[in-house]
Image 1 (cartoon, rainbow over the protein chains, first blue to last red):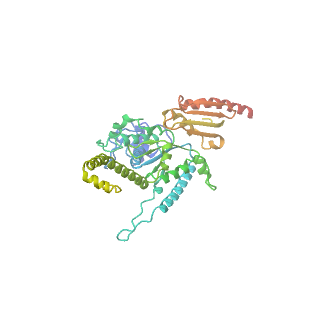
Image 2: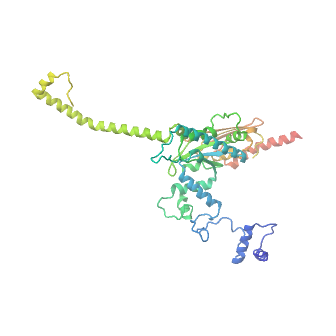
Image 3: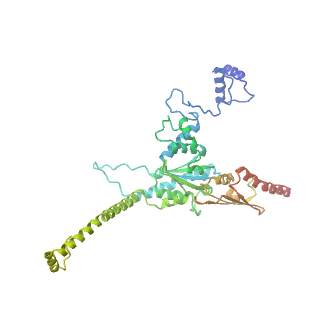
Length: 328
Length: 97
């Protein structure tokens, strides 16, 4: 676009005296000039347009402008809430960038160590019929991530993830209809009380007690004792972290406090728990069968005893074989 | 917020309570190097606890201020603390010259 057009546009839209102008502002002025509109600057603040879709694309509608950071984060948070079975919520008080980097690095190293321990404790993979070893699943520790969240957007995403009916006909979870339908639930989820101030979450791909225990011991130790040679930045960073609570079981799950979270770390891993549950159910079934059987069995024993009492032949034989118990 | 004259901060709150908002924001307002210049103790109450959040601040001159954080917004809280900090700052400026 030749500069003369821009200057004309600026003159016509009463451009305030400014030394420099950004490209984005320039585009708005030019757009206003071309459209012949008088309103130009500050029109790009926040628009709650009901039809926020990119031109010529099939991207779903969003409540905020489609290319804004808010839309991106809202979509990220919704997918995080729907896919994460356990997230630990913490507060970080004025962490420096370098401290956050040190914490993330030490967390990654600790997770790798736990992964190695878990892999060592598990039996070696059995080759299938073709002699191929099945591919190993991705280690849990690799997927443990620490994310600092925007609390307002996170609670908005939480509302949509938790309270939007499953059969609701909305174009997209970040769309205006989903926003309007869930607005009434503002402040009703117990997790929203945690989302105040500087907050981050640690997301776990599965509920794996050894990994949770390692994270709690590393980042939220009850007594701060560090190994020799620990990064001082890590130590100063960890002292600023506060464990607040956790959310379990994806959508519809509970928000738990720190005591409950510590209880989870004492549980065994999932196969062990499944085995325990199976044993419990089997013993309960056997007990039920025995209970149902006992009245009929008692009746049979009584009747049989009476029959033997009345029958003289069997009485005789019973006297003869008094030492042998009657065959059931 | 003037944090130069604080020597000890003790805070207790229940993170699941709506009253603990100002306490948590207060903790996040302490500067990044606060832990080297003052002692900070934070106590998390269990979820079922009905206790209200409390903040106890000790200043360098020994004055202890206990604040009921549930009744104060963060602005009021900062105002309360700064009132005494300003007195100390003034004393320091006069004594230094």
